[in-house]
Length: 342
Image 1: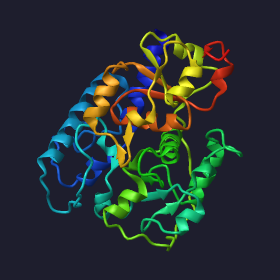
Image 2: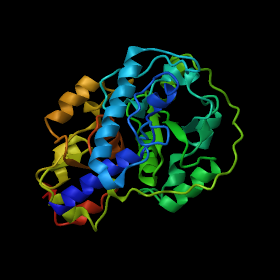
Image 3: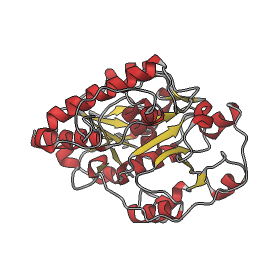
């Protein structure tokens, strides 16, 4: 029980420390949000938690975000607003995590767009202004998972700062595990605002974006990570997580792999075909129906079966669930592994 409270408290506090959502940032000059408290001007500060009254601050933050969302839904635009078209369908708990290709031309100029394909694919044609950050440059040599130190160096070379708002895309129009990996990696490293381009580069082309072979110049940055350890399951914390009453174990692999071996008899198979179609992630109604019958809203979802697990992690976060990710196959050597292979 102690771990459950501690984990959830950290998770909620971390959510409070993230900056305004991408959508809210785009409409910041549009919406006149009520002054709720938290700054010298009397306006509520969504990135300045009141540690002396965290529950009260979280309640204020929820009210603030509702006001932002209601203002966005009203569609009002004021002086200095950034025009955005083709926003993702409503209904996602965290719509700022998903960027529609049709809105690329309306995004602010200081936004960092990362193309996570190989350098060869990047140079064959990419979204104007996008920087190349090959997803394998964030992983250990030979693959096998995130190397935080190596990732920080790669992000610095790409000119990314931890405070930047970032849109990530890859080459797949449906589930793109490489782009989802970078989303999870940046979240784990403490990046404040990260979203995925729905449908990847194919969606951008379909939306009329003219690709270019010109690489933008960018300064080298000193990337400083602020690790969020609760987003990664390790051999040291797996047993404690499995003992939490409201934990759910989700296997992102195909059903055939799930049938041969899995992490505990209680694990549930949620393969990618349930989450994505050929054009991108499924709509909020489909994901809501899928998750509500399998995952506790206030519980913890342990996601495993990489690389597919990265896309499942993203889907859960998009719908507002508390997810943590287990990288690699080391779980198969633990006492909780169940095998049907004789």
